[in-house]
Amino acid sequence: MKTILLVLILIPSVAQALQVGAERTSLYLPLLEGKNVALVVNQTSRVNGSHTIDYLISKKVKVNKLFALEHGIRGDYDAGEDVANGIDVRTGLPVISLYGNNKKPKKEDLQNVDTIIFDIQDVGVRFYTYISSLSYILDACGDFHKTCIIFDRPNPLANQIAGPVLDLSQQSFLGMYPIPVVYGLTIGELAKMIVRESWVKSNPTLKVIELEGWNRSDLYKLPIKPSPNLPTMNSIKWYS
Image 1 (tube, rainbow, N blue to C red):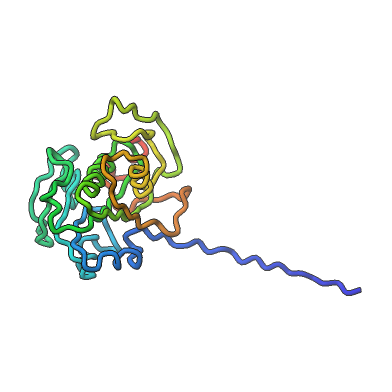
Image 2 (cartoon, one colour; image 1 turned 90 degrees about the vertical axis):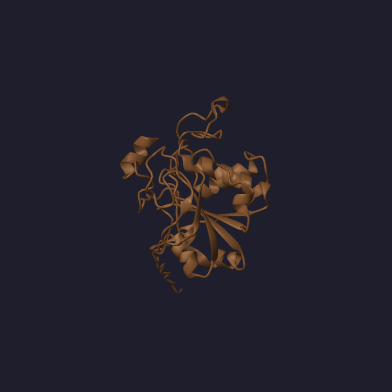
């Protein structure tokens, strides 16, 4: 009687390198061919070491407008400071402020725009104003038949959910959605929820360029501080 020896060789799995949405260029550059593009960006908007503005222009994407949220497109405005319309000195592109009296893009703001790209690092806390601005942008895309593309980025607090759900009688720009204080979603996931739950009045066309090689339990250290008052991971934790 022959004895057969089976040898099981265990090959360790190799963790896939994290790619944020902005780095998955093969998924979105074809969508931008022949399109007039506006960007919602700030200092965290980076692609392979370059600002998203500069990267897309280098790839011959027709970027013709920039929208600024709190702290501006380069992160040089203080918290709560009104962000003015103007011209980006580095590119010569017009900058339209969506922080201050005007929070939602108007019809004239979206002339010669087919697609709005939203590329902003979130911190996973309900009263962070960038996610409120996202609502107004999605609503405008629905109103004026534009496409919104979100470059997803990890949520540094994605492995936790905490705090009460917002009482909508207290709804404001510092809290727009019936979600907990710490809500455990990436900004792309939140955008999908906003649309599917009809938390915006219109019905926008949304495309999320999802993350690759990221697990919700992974510790994600932000490479660039998301706002002037959140310079460290400890500050983000205490912010919530």
